Image (cartoon, rainbow, N blue to C red; front, side):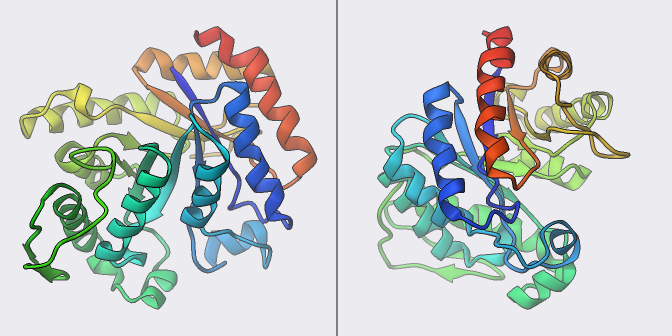
Length: 292
């Protein structure tokens, strides 16, 4: 099982250099991937967590990281697709994939904060339909020499699109979300499923549904591997945590490994930069070796 690390761009860290430096150290310590999250406004539960503190844009963060690392995968956990024009996002993502030598993984989701989504221009009730079409648009642009698409939200033809991503036929699209709609989207169109903070017993049931839906659409379950984003610290009702003690973390991570989870993305769940590096080093020296 692989281990990724959240760069904590969503935790309100005042000095962006504290966020950026985590990526280089994660690569040195042997994490397979680093991940950045997305919201545009500090509202709802985001405001409750960080108030007016900075929430840094994920693709900008990962562009910098691409230039300062050489091996680690660059993931989003997750981009809220209705906040993006899918044609422009396809261009940005393909450019980042080329810049990084084919290291981008796009975790994507439909979003949950209605006020923020309305401000970004997509009606909340249409977010699922918008996301489904956006996935098709991006795949068309990335893979076809002469892309053409006629849809409800996007239409184009007769124009070239470049650059194409290094990864073909498309940049891996990992579908976030724990709902049955998200699982069906992953089974139908994703290159993976990426829920957040689900207890192992709930994840086990959800994975059974995922395997049912992949079979129903004629895909093998191996085409839709499962990764999960999990915070450290104390858990709470409806939100699982790995804990803090290395032995507890190993025990909890082992439960996910036994279910067939391919990757755990660990969030340190703190904005204290002084705690970040020791946490990463503990994971690398006392947790990750148990899975290799």
